[in-house]
Length: 312
Ligand code: ZN
Figure 1: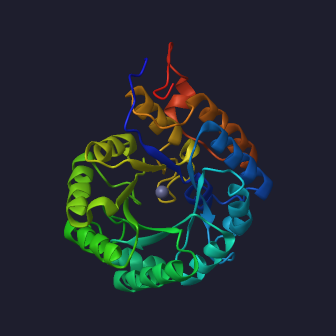
Figure 2 (figure 1 turned 60 degrees about the horizontal axis):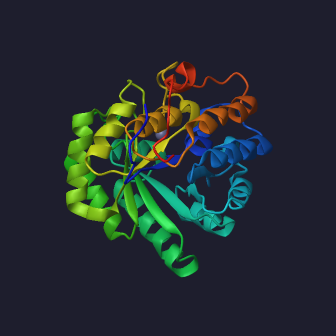
């Protein structure tokens, strides 16, 4: 298992404290979230999406996001991200001091209308307003657009690849620093992932951002590897796969961080994350959300005999 000289490496962006926690009914106590984030940082995680700036009545699980941001900022060298759905959320996030904002924009018009009651074009206008806020008030803050339902939609079914490329271009033109592709519904396959990232990169070049894959149908890791093969170097994942898909009880949602780190490290691709410490970071998660299922093959199987990490 000894992994060979490991470069260029990848960035694993932990989204559990946002994407995971927003999908579970229980609310994790603020102190428990902080312990979980501390454990992720101790494992070497260098980017964490810590919450979402949405009205507390919509997502009471994330009502303490500003406090969690401030806690996250006590860890030097860690990029603290938050999701914002609109300009008002962006104002709150900038006031809290985030390093990076992520704005979800549906590639499916039907999903956009159902989810935020706005067309995709109206969301691009919102993005443009957020970029203007950033330019004026917080020029060092990065702005990411995350194109949700990029690989298929539970409402409209197929999402045309030309629509995704058009939207990525519109977001780049609106001033987003990078544009990621999200398999919100777990419908992607590796051939599609290669095709779509290549098409988006042909349109917007180095603004092509992260792969946010779900494991709903068991293809999460395969899709991440396909994205890696076509040049993607940032991957969203959730510790314990937290955030099971609400439409498929028992099915895991986000790609499991532990399994993703294991895959890359086993291939000799450095993540900067110590996998034993990462597995240990499940303890504060489980303690903070008693009874909530957590997933992951690597934590169950353990590390192979003679395991050595890529960055060692
Ligand atoms: Zn997700």
